[in-house]
Amino acid sequence: MPKCPKCDKEVYFAERVSSLNKDWHRPCLRCEKCNKTLTPGSHAEHEGKPYCNQPCYAAMFGPKGFGRGGTESHTFK
Image (cartoon, rainbow, N blue to C red):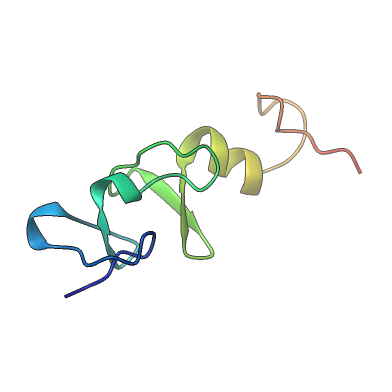
């Protein structure tokens, strides 16, 4: 029986959601940053962790600078 990568409990067939080549419980497949529930195929992955496409993945790992929108789009160094 596969184990959920988030809660480490067994995932039964009826409650299984497959994403990132792993089986998850539906409530466990959430964005690592904002905790929004994700659906398979409609999110991005970075270092094996799921993120929602907008705004989290784009803000954290997308192009930086002005014109991308949101308060997290520009980083001061």
